[in-house]
Amino acid sequence: MKHYDEHTIELFALGSDKVAFERSEFLNHIDECYSCREMYEEMAQFYKLANGDQRQLHEHVENADSTSLAIKPEYRYVRPVVPVPRSIPARAWQYARRRPVVSSFSGIGIAALITLVLNTTVPKKDNNPAYVVPNDSLGKISVFNKNDEKLWDLPGRYFFNLREYEGLGSVSQTQVADFDLDGSNEIATVVRFGKLTPLISPVLRIYRADQQLTFNSLMEIKLQYGGKLYEMSFVARFLLPFNTGPGVPTDLLIGYCHTNSPSVIQRVNGKGEIIGEYAHIGHFASGYMMHIAGIDHKVCVLSGIDDIQGQGVITILDPARLAGKSESPATPGFGYRKSDAEIYSVLIPLTDFERAGGTRGGIRFLSEETADRIKFTYYTSNLHVGIETVPMYYEFSKTLEIQNIHLSDGVKILHKYYRDKGKISSTLDHRYIENLKKQIKYWNGRQWGDKPVRLDSLQNPLVKR
Image (cartoon, rainbow, N blue to C red):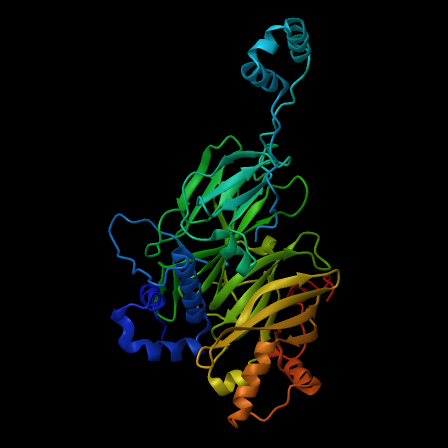
Protein backbone atom coordinates (compact mmCIF):
# COMPACT_ATOMS: atom_id res chain seq x y z
CA MET A 1 0.00 0.00 0.00
CA LYS A 2 1.23 3.50 -0.84
CA HIS A 3 1.75 5.75 2.17
CA TYR A 4 1.91 9.54 2.26
CA ASP A 5 4.95 11.19 3.85
CA GLU A 6 4.51 13.39 6.90
CA HIS A 7 4.96 16.72 5.11
CA THR A 8 2.26 15.88 2.54
CA ILE A 9 -0.14 14.80 5.31
CA GLU A 10 0.60 18.10 7.06
CA LEU A 11 -0.38 19.98 3.88
CA PHE A 12 -3.70 18.12 3.76
CA ALA A 13 -4.31 18.94 7.45
CA LEU A 14 -3.66 22.61 6.66
CA GLY A 15 -5.94 22.57 3.62
CA SER A 16 -3.07 23.71 1.42
CA ASP A 17 -3.76 24.54 -2.22
CA LYS A 18 -0.61 22.61 -3.14
CA VAL A 19 -2.40 19.29 -2.60
CA ALA A 20 -6.00 20.29 -3.36
CA PHE A 21 -5.94 18.42 -6.68
CA GLU A 22 -5.36 15.06 -4.95
CA ARG A 23 -7.46 15.56 -1.81
CA SER A 24 -10.16 13.14 -3.00
CA GLU A 25 -7.54 10.43 -3.58
CA PHE A 26 -6.05 11.14 -0.15
CA LEU A 27 -9.44 10.80 1.60
CA ASN A 28 -9.98 7.46 -0.14
CA HIS A 29 -6.55 6.34 1.03
CA ILE A 30 -7.02 7.23 4.71
CA ASP A 31 -10.33 5.39 4.74
CA GLU A 32 -8.22 2.26 4.20
CA CYS A 33 -4.96 3.23 5.94
CA TYR A 34 -5.19 3.45 9.73
CA SER A 35 -1.72 4.94 10.30
CA CYS A 36 -2.03 7.72 7.68
CA ARG A 37 -5.51 8.54 8.97
CA GLU A 38 -4.31 8.67 12.57
CA MET A 39 -1.48 11.04 11.68
CA TYR A 40 -3.87 13.24 9.64
CA GLU A 41 -6.36 13.39 12.52
CA GLU A 42 -3.62 14.25 15.02
CA MET A 43 -2.24 17.03 12.82
CA ALA A 44 -5.68 18.42 12.04
CA GLN A 45 -6.50 18.43 15.73
CA PHE A 46 -3.19 20.08 16.57
CA TYR A 47 -3.72 22.95 14.14
CA LYS A 48 -7.29 23.37 15.34
CA LEU A 49 -6.04 23.68 18.92
CA ALA A 50 -3.12 25.87 17.97
CA ASN A 51 -5.32 28.31 16.05
CA GLY A 52 -8.12 28.46 18.63
CA ASP A 53 -11.29 29.85 17.08
CA GLN A 54 -9.51 31.11 13.97
CA ARG A 55 -10.71 29.45 10.83
CA GLN A 56 -7.62 30.19 8.77
CA LEU A 57 -4.76 27.74 9.23
CA HIS A 58 -1.23 28.55 8.22
CA GLU A 59 1.07 26.25 6.36
CA HIS A 60 4.45 25.60 7.95
CA VAL A 61 7.45 26.86 5.99
CA GLU A 62 10.59 24.80 6.44
CA ASN A 63 13.92 26.39 7.23
CA ALA A 64 17.36 24.97 7.82
CA ASP A 65 17.65 26.17 11.42
CA SER A 66 14.34 24.77 12.66
CA THR A 67 14.09 22.17 15.43
CA SER A 68 11.80 19.17 15.63
CA LEU A 69 8.54 18.56 17.41
CA ALA A 70 6.30 15.50 17.43
CA ILE A 71 2.58 15.92 17.58
CA LYS A 72 0.16 13.74 19.40
CA PRO A 73 -0.82 10.16 22.15
CA GLU A 74 -2.01 10.62 30.56
CA TYR A 75 -0.96 12.43 33.24
CA ARG A 76 -2.46 10.54 36.12
CA TYR A 77 -1.10 13.05 38.64
CA VAL A 78 -3.28 16.04 37.92
CA ARG A 79 -3.30 17.73 41.32
CA PRO A 80 -4.18 21.32 42.23
CA VAL A 81 -1.24 23.47 43.26
CA VAL A 82 -1.64 24.26 46.97
CA PRO A 83 -0.75 27.91 47.78
CA VAL A 84 1.94 28.18 50.44
CA PRO A 85 0.87 30.45 53.35
CA ARG A 86 3.15 33.34 54.24
CA SER A 87 5.51 32.73 57.13
CA ILE A 88 5.10 34.44 60.52
CA PRO A 89 8.01 36.90 59.89
CA ALA A 90 6.53 37.82 56.50
CA ARG A 91 3.14 38.48 58.00
CA ALA A 92 4.65 40.55 60.83
CA TRP A 93 6.67 42.62 58.35
CA GLN A 94 3.61 43.20 56.17
CA TYR A 95 1.58 44.26 59.23
CA ALA A 96 4.32 46.70 60.31
CA ARG A 97 4.43 48.25 56.83
CA ARG A 98 0.67 48.74 56.69
CA ARG A 99 0.28 50.01 60.31
CA PRO A 100 3.56 51.71 61.31
CA VAL A 101 2.02 53.71 64.17
CA VAL A 102 0.35 50.74 65.78
CA SER A 103 3.45 48.67 65.24
CA SER A 104 5.69 51.23 66.96
CA PHE A 105 3.79 50.64 70.21
CA SER A 106 4.19 46.92 69.94
CA GLY A 107 7.95 46.66 70.41
CA ILE A 108 7.67 44.19 73.24
CA GLY A 109 5.27 42.03 71.24
CA ILE A 110 7.51 42.12 68.19
CA ALA A 111 10.55 41.23 70.29
CA ALA A 112 8.65 38.27 71.70
CA LEU A 113 7.63 37.32 68.16
CA ILE A 114 11.26 37.44 66.95
CA THR A 115 12.33 35.28 69.88
CA LEU A 116 9.60 32.78 68.97
CA VAL A 117 10.66 32.74 65.30
CA LEU A 118 14.34 32.24 66.15
CA ASN A 119 13.46 29.26 68.31
CA THR A 120 11.06 27.76 65.77
CA THR A 121 12.45 25.16 63.39
CA VAL A 122 11.47 25.94 59.79
CA PRO A 123 10.73 22.68 57.93
CA LYS A 124 13.11 22.07 55.08
CA LYS A 125 11.52 22.00 51.64
CA ASP A 126 11.44 18.59 49.99
CA ASN A 127 13.32 19.03 46.71
CA ASN A 128 12.78 15.48 45.49
CA PRO A 129 10.60 15.41 42.32
CA ALA A 130 7.46 13.28 42.64
CA TYR A 131 5.42 14.08 39.53
CA VAL A 132 5.12 16.53 36.65
CA VAL A 133 2.22 18.53 35.22
CA PRO A 134 2.19 20.17 31.76
CA ASN A 135 1.11 23.80 31.57
CA ASP A 136 -0.18 24.16 28.03
CA SER A 137 -0.78 27.91 28.30
CA LEU A 138 2.94 28.46 28.98
CA GLY A 139 4.26 25.45 27.09
CA LYS A 140 6.08 24.32 30.23
CA ILE A 141 6.34 21.05 32.16
CA SER A 142 6.31 21.83 35.90
CA VAL A 143 7.95 19.58 38.48
CA PHE A 144 6.30 19.03 41.89
CA ASN A 145 7.29 17.26 45.09
CA LYS A 146 5.08 14.85 47.04
CA ASN A 147 3.65 17.79 49.02
CA ASP A 148 2.30 19.33 45.80
CA GLU A 149 4.85 22.16 45.95
CA LYS A 150 6.22 23.33 42.64
CA LEU A 151 9.98 22.88 42.42
CA TRP A 152 10.95 24.03 38.92
CA ASP A 153 10.14 23.83 35.20
CA LEU A 154 11.86 21.66 32.65
CA PRO A 155 13.93 23.86 30.33
CA GLY A 156 12.41 24.61 26.94
CA ARG A 157 8.92 25.26 25.66
CA TYR A 158 6.52 23.12 23.70
CA PHE A 159 3.96 24.52 21.27
CA PHE A 160 1.00 22.14 21.35
CA ASN A 161 -1.64 20.93 23.81
CA LEU A 162 0.47 18.25 25.45
CA ARG A 163 -2.05 17.48 28.15
CA GLU A 164 -4.82 16.79 25.67
CA TYR A 165 -2.37 15.04 23.34
CA GLU A 166 -1.42 12.56 26.05
CA GLY A 167 -4.93 12.20 27.42
CA LEU A 168 -6.45 11.28 24.07
CA GLY A 169 -3.93 8.49 23.58
CA SER A 170 -3.76 7.46 27.25
CA VAL A 171 0.03 7.70 27.27
CA SER A 172 2.76 9.71 28.97
CA GLN A 173 5.92 11.16 27.48
CA THR A 174 7.57 12.09 30.81
CA GLN A 175 8.39 9.84 33.75
CA VAL A 176 9.71 10.46 37.28
CA ALA A 177 11.67 7.66 39.00
CA ASP A 178 14.91 6.92 40.86
CA PHE A 179 16.74 5.48 37.89
CA ASP A 180 20.16 5.23 39.57
CA LEU A 181 19.06 4.27 43.13
CA ASP A 182 20.74 7.32 44.70
CA GLY A 183 17.68 8.16 46.80
CA SER A 184 16.53 11.06 44.60
CA ASN A 185 14.21 10.87 41.63
CA GLU A 186 15.25 11.76 38.11
CA ILE A 187 13.00 13.03 35.31
CA ALA A 188 13.08 11.50 31.84
CA THR A 189 11.19 13.01 28.90
CA VAL A 190 10.78 12.54 25.16
CA VAL A 191 8.56 15.61 24.75
CA ARG A 192 9.70 17.66 21.76
CA PHE A 193 10.42 21.23 22.69
CA GLY A 194 10.40 23.89 19.99
CA LYS A 195 8.06 24.78 17.14
CA LEU A 196 6.46 22.30 14.76
CA THR A 197 8.98 21.35 12.08
CA PRO A 198 9.76 18.37 9.86
CA LEU A 199 10.60 15.40 12.07
CA ILE A 200 14.08 14.26 12.97
CA SER A 201 15.14 11.54 15.38
CA PRO A 202 13.46 11.73 18.81
CA VAL A 203 15.42 13.19 21.74
CA LEU A 204 15.64 11.64 25.21
CA ARG A 205 16.52 13.98 28.10
CA ILE A 206 17.17 12.93 31.70
CA TYR A 207 17.41 15.50 34.55
CA ARG A 208 18.56 15.02 38.14
CA ALA A 209 16.61 16.39 41.09
CA ASP A 210 19.01 19.37 41.20
CA GLN A 211 17.98 20.26 37.61
CA GLN A 212 21.25 19.06 36.09
CA LEU A 213 20.88 17.53 32.63
CA THR A 214 22.62 14.14 32.73
CA PHE A 215 21.57 12.80 29.32
CA ASN A 216 20.55 14.61 26.14
CA SER A 217 20.82 12.75 22.87
CA LEU A 218 19.09 11.90 19.62
CA MET A 219 17.81 8.33 19.80
CA GLU A 220 18.80 7.31 16.30
CA ILE A 221 16.90 4.36 14.85
CA LYS A 222 17.78 2.53 11.65
CA LEU A 223 15.71 -0.37 10.34
CA GLN A 224 15.93 -2.29 7.08
CA TYR A 225 12.73 -3.95 5.87
CA GLY A 226 11.64 -5.08 2.43
CA GLY A 227 14.66 -3.46 0.82
CA LYS A 228 13.84 -0.07 2.34
CA LEU A 229 15.85 1.78 4.99
CA TYR A 230 13.88 3.48 7.77
CA GLU A 231 15.95 5.98 9.73
CA MET A 232 14.11 9.32 9.82
CA SER A 233 10.60 10.44 10.78
CA PHE A 234 10.39 8.24 13.88
CA VAL A 235 8.17 9.70 16.60
CA ALA A 236 8.42 8.84 20.31
CA ARG A 237 4.82 7.96 21.17
CA PHE A 238 5.14 6.98 24.82
CA LEU A 239 7.55 6.53 27.72
CA LEU A 240 7.09 3.88 30.41
CA PRO A 241 9.08 3.03 33.57
CA PHE A 242 10.13 -0.58 34.14
CA ASN A 243 11.99 -2.51 36.83
CA THR A 244 12.04 -6.09 38.03
CA GLY A 245 11.62 -5.33 41.73
CA PRO A 246 12.76 -3.33 44.79
CA GLY A 247 16.42 -2.34 44.84
CA VAL A 248 16.74 -2.73 41.07
CA PRO A 249 17.45 0.30 38.85
CA THR A 250 14.47 1.51 36.82
CA ASP A 251 14.75 1.32 33.04
CA LEU A 252 12.68 3.09 30.40
CA LEU A 253 10.56 1.64 27.63
CA ILE A 254 10.23 4.04 24.70
CA GLY A 255 7.69 3.37 21.98
CA TYR A 256 8.60 4.77 18.54
CA CYS A 257 6.58 4.82 15.34
CA HIS A 258 7.76 5.67 11.87
CA THR A 259 5.49 7.95 9.83
CA ASN A 260 3.29 4.94 9.08
CA SER A 261 5.20 1.78 9.90
CA PRO A 262 7.30 0.15 11.43
CA SER A 263 7.27 0.49 15.22
CA VAL A 264 10.15 -0.01 17.65
CA ILE A 265 10.13 -0.58 21.41
CA GLN A 266 13.44 0.31 23.07
CA ARG A 267 14.56 -0.64 26.55
CA VAL A 268 16.92 2.09 27.83
CA ASN A 269 18.66 2.35 31.20
CA GLY A 270 18.92 5.47 33.37
CA LYS A 271 22.14 6.47 31.62
CA GLY A 272 20.44 6.54 28.22
CA GLU A 273 22.12 3.32 27.05
CA ILE A 274 20.02 1.08 24.80
CA ILE A 275 19.66 -2.42 26.27
CA GLY A 276 17.28 -3.96 23.76
CA GLU A 277 14.99 -3.31 20.78
CA TYR A 278 11.84 -4.98 19.48
CA ALA A 279 10.78 -4.23 15.88
CA HIS A 280 7.29 -4.72 14.44
CA ILE A 281 5.66 -3.97 11.09
CA GLY A 282 2.74 -1.88 12.19
CA HIS A 283 1.84 1.03 14.40
CA PHE A 284 1.83 0.81 18.20
CA ALA A 285 -0.12 3.85 19.36
CA SER A 286 0.17 3.29 23.11
CA GLY A 287 1.72 1.20 25.88
CA TYR A 288 0.59 0.28 29.39
CA MET A 289 2.27 -1.54 32.31
CA MET A 290 0.37 -4.18 34.30
CA HIS A 291 0.80 -7.42 36.25
CA ILE A 292 -0.14 -10.86 34.92
CA ALA A 293 0.06 -14.28 36.52
CA GLY A 294 3.38 -16.06 36.55
CA ILE A 295 5.62 -12.97 36.33
CA ASP A 296 6.68 -10.97 39.39
CA HIS A 297 7.28 -7.68 37.57
CA LYS A 298 4.96 -5.68 35.35
CA VAL A 299 4.70 -6.44 31.64
CA CYS A 300 4.08 -4.04 28.75
CA VAL A 301 0.75 -4.06 26.89
CA LEU A 302 1.02 -2.61 23.37
CA SER A 303 -1.98 -1.45 21.33
CA GLY A 304 -2.08 -0.65 17.63
CA ILE A 305 -2.28 -2.20 14.19
CA ASP A 306 -0.49 -5.03 12.36
CA ASP A 307 0.35 -3.83 8.86
CA ILE A 308 0.97 -7.34 7.54
CA GLN A 309 -2.58 -8.46 8.36
CA GLY A 310 -4.13 -4.98 8.14
CA GLN A 311 -5.93 -5.48 11.46
CA GLY A 312 -5.86 -4.18 15.01
CA VAL A 313 -3.37 -5.89 17.29
CA ILE A 314 -2.66 -6.29 21.01
CA THR A 315 0.78 -7.52 22.02
CA ILE A 316 2.05 -8.16 25.56
CA LEU A 317 5.82 -8.11 26.08
CA ASP A 318 8.05 -9.09 29.00
CA PRO A 319 10.49 -6.13 29.07
CA ALA A 320 13.04 -8.17 31.03
CA ARG A 321 13.57 -10.22 27.88
CA LEU A 322 14.32 -7.21 25.68
CA ALA A 323 18.04 -7.54 25.06
CA GLY A 324 19.82 -6.85 21.78
CA LYS A 325 17.92 -6.44 18.51
CA SER A 326 14.87 -8.62 17.93
CA GLU A 327 11.77 -8.70 15.74
CA SER A 328 8.18 -9.80 16.18
CA PRO A 329 7.86 -13.42 15.00
CA ALA A 330 4.51 -12.46 13.42
CA THR A 331 6.09 -9.73 11.26
CA PRO A 332 9.57 -11.03 10.33
CA GLY A 333 11.85 -9.43 7.76
CA PHE A 334 14.14 -7.05 9.68
CA GLY A 335 17.00 -9.52 9.75
CA TYR A 336 16.97 -9.73 13.57
CA ARG A 337 16.49 -12.77 15.79
CA LYS A 338 12.90 -13.66 16.63
CA SER A 339 11.93 -12.06 19.90
CA ASP A 340 11.31 -14.26 22.93
CA ALA A 341 9.77 -11.32 24.82
CA GLU A 342 6.23 -11.82 23.47
CA ILE A 343 3.73 -13.28 25.95
CA TYR A 344 0.52 -12.82 23.96
CA SER A 345 -0.33 -11.41 20.54
CA VAL A 346 -3.94 -10.96 19.44
CA LEU A 347 -5.49 -9.88 16.10
CA ILE A 348 -8.79 -7.97 16.10
CA PRO A 349 -11.07 -8.76 13.14
CA LEU A 350 -12.44 -6.27 10.64
CA THR A 351 -16.18 -5.78 10.84
CA ASP A 352 -18.42 -6.37 7.85
CA PHE A 353 -19.09 -2.64 7.50
CA GLU A 354 -15.34 -1.91 7.50
CA ARG A 355 -14.84 -4.42 4.70
CA ALA A 356 -17.83 -2.98 2.83
CA GLY A 357 -16.41 0.54 3.10
CA GLY A 358 -12.80 -0.45 2.41
CA THR A 359 -11.69 0.93 5.79
CA ARG A 360 -9.82 -0.51 8.73
CA GLY A 361 -9.30 0.42 12.35
CA GLY A 362 -6.92 -0.36 15.17
CA ILE A 363 -6.63 -0.75 18.92
CA ARG A 364 -5.87 2.74 20.28
CA PHE A 365 -5.25 2.05 23.99
CA LEU A 366 -6.03 -0.05 27.04
CA SER A 367 -8.89 1.94 28.55
CA GLU A 368 -9.72 0.00 31.72
CA GLU A 369 -8.09 -2.58 34.00
CA THR A 370 -9.74 -4.48 36.87
CA ALA A 371 -8.49 -7.38 38.99
CA ASP A 372 -9.32 -9.94 36.34
CA ARG A 373 -10.18 -8.05 33.14
CA ILE A 374 -8.79 -5.50 30.70
CA LYS A 375 -10.76 -3.42 28.21
CA PHE A 376 -9.35 -1.96 24.99
CA THR A 377 -10.70 0.89 22.87
CA TYR A 378 -10.77 0.15 19.14
CA TYR A 379 -11.23 3.05 16.72
CA THR A 380 -12.45 2.89 13.17
CA SER A 381 -13.77 5.68 10.94
CA ASN A 382 -15.37 6.50 7.64
CA LEU A 383 -14.86 10.06 6.46
CA HIS A 384 -17.19 9.58 3.49
CA VAL A 385 -20.05 8.92 5.91
CA GLY A 386 -18.97 11.96 7.92
CA ILE A 387 -17.72 10.07 10.97
CA GLU A 388 -14.09 10.58 11.97
CA THR A 389 -13.71 8.21 14.93
CA VAL A 390 -16.02 5.37 15.92
CA PRO A 391 -15.14 3.43 19.08
CA MET A 392 -15.71 -0.22 19.88
CA TYR A 393 -14.64 -1.84 23.15
CA TYR A 394 -13.05 -5.27 23.44
CA GLU A 395 -13.04 -6.81 26.91
CA PHE A 396 -10.59 -9.63 27.68
CA SER A 397 -9.55 -11.70 30.68
CA LYS A 398 -5.97 -11.27 31.90
CA THR A 399 -5.16 -14.40 29.87
CA LEU A 400 -6.50 -12.64 26.74
CA GLU A 401 -9.67 -14.72 26.38
CA ILE A 402 -12.38 -12.53 24.88
CA GLN A 403 -15.21 -11.80 27.30
CA ASN A 404 -17.35 -9.19 25.60
CA ILE A 405 -17.52 -6.65 22.78
CA HIS A 406 -19.37 -3.36 23.26
CA LEU A 407 -20.65 -1.41 20.24
CA SER A 408 -21.03 2.38 20.30
CA ASP A 409 -23.78 4.44 18.67
CA GLY A 410 -21.32 5.32 15.89
CA VAL A 411 -21.00 1.63 15.03
CA LYS A 412 -24.78 1.42 14.72
CA ILE A 413 -24.78 4.41 12.35
CA LEU A 414 -22.07 2.93 10.11
CA HIS A 415 -23.71 -0.49 10.12
CA LYS A 416 -27.09 0.98 9.16
CA TYR A 417 -25.49 3.06 6.40
CA TYR A 418 -24.01 0.02 4.62
CA ARG A 419 -27.03 -2.16 5.32
CA ASP A 420 -29.34 0.44 3.76
CA LYS A 421 -27.05 0.47 0.71
CA GLY A 422 -27.38 -3.32 0.45
CA LYS A 423 -23.67 -3.93 0.98
CA ILE A 424 -24.14 -5.94 4.20
CA SER A 425 -27.05 -8.01 5.52
CA SER A 426 -26.10 -8.67 9.13
CA THR A 427 -28.10 -7.62 12.19
CA LEU A 428 -26.50 -6.00 15.24
CA ASP A 429 -27.52 -8.53 17.88
CA HIS A 430 -25.86 -11.05 20.19
CA ARG A 431 -25.09 -13.31 17.22
CA TYR A 432 -23.16 -10.46 15.58
CA ILE A 433 -21.07 -10.09 18.75
CA GLU A 434 -20.46 -13.84 19.00
CA ASN A 435 -19.39 -13.97 15.36
CA LEU A 436 -16.85 -11.17 15.95
CA LYS A 437 -15.50 -13.06 18.97
CA LYS A 438 -14.92 -16.17 16.86
CA GLN A 439 -12.88 -14.15 14.35
CA ILE A 440 -10.29 -13.02 16.93
CA LYS A 441 -6.94 -14.69 16.21
CA TYR A 442 -3.99 -15.53 18.49
CA TRP A 443 -0.34 -15.98 17.52
CA ASN A 444 0.77 -19.50 18.54
CA GLY A 445 4.46 -19.18 17.75
CA ARG A 446 4.11 -20.28 14.12
CA GLN A 447 0.83 -18.86 12.81
CA TRP A 448 -2.45 -17.20 13.78
CA GLY A 449 -4.87 -19.60 15.47
CA ASP A 450 -8.24 -19.60 17.19
CA LYS A 451 -7.22 -20.11 20.84
CA PRO A 452 -5.15 -17.96 23.22
CA VAL A 453 -1.55 -19.15 23.56
CA ARG A 454 0.82 -17.93 26.23
CA LEU A 455 4.00 -17.71 24.19
CA ASP A 456 6.49 -17.65 27.08
CA SER A 457 5.08 -21.04 28.21
CA LEU A 458 6.28 -22.50 24.91
CA GLN A 459 9.84 -21.58 25.88
CA ASN A 460 9.51 -22.39 29.59
CA PRO A 461 7.15 -25.27 30.54
CA LEU A 462 7.14 -24.05 34.17
CA VAL A 463 5.24 -20.89 33.20
CA LYS A 464 1.52 -21.29 33.82
CA ARG A 465 -0.67 -20.82 30.78
